[in-house]
Length: 365
Image: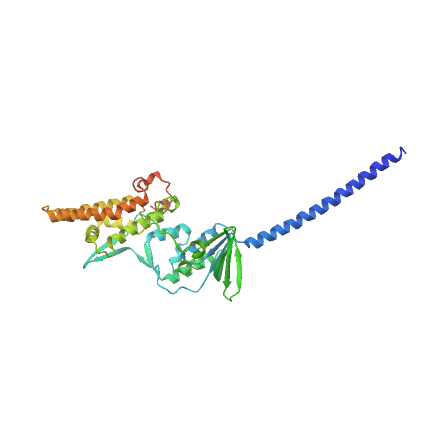
């Protein structure tokens, strides 16, 4: 009996070892199968793309190129890849040329019969004022451009499609795929009419004026704020440009208000003087100078010029009334914009991070 005891221990050990091998083998197969199922779910969920871009216009094509150059896998879906045949956005301001340089897309304005624009001419009541863009500060060509919109779009699309990580496909996106309120991808119809789906962790919708997706992202009753507090510093340059353009529209737009006409005339007279005032104004218009403080200073100079014209050589009651109207009209344009922009942003912009406040230093001399 004592001799049988070691044999029993050995047999039990062998059986236990074989049992462990069997359990481990089954568990390993289960893990592999689960891994295959998980990988299949990821592939079905995102389809190998990092970003889906809906629309291959100016924004969509430039975004696709920038992301693709950064190593992202981009799937661009455009409703119609034919050259657009409509008149829209035929002028590119100097700030836009700088943006193309930053993105590496500056050659997209080549070979499309683009015309360099060195300045502007304002016409008012039979008079004209010539305004030159201050280009001497830059060692690269940042002159404004006028061109055919469709040719520019095609060049942007060709540039984006030249990257191996960018897939450009024609199709009409019909809806967004949502899961628990999160956009997972899009449903689109191909050129042949076949319905397909595309998935990605991020979907960017920029399909322009023909968009049929806005109703899925916002309600039909959208509240429009007349004054919106600015809290996104990365959007500083864009908002400042809108600030400046809005002010110029108010100055030179058609208005029955006599005071508005007077401030517009005063500003036009200052522009007609030429020199630093006109060049600084074109820098504001073209986006080369994104400082709201400079615009406020220009308004003060224009108001001072207009008041001086009304009160000199001899002040009169009529001149005083006109001066009051002029100051009131200028305040009615600038003060609401300053309030929307923020006091600190207007008068102390250096206290904010310099994200796109000015053109990149490497583009200046």
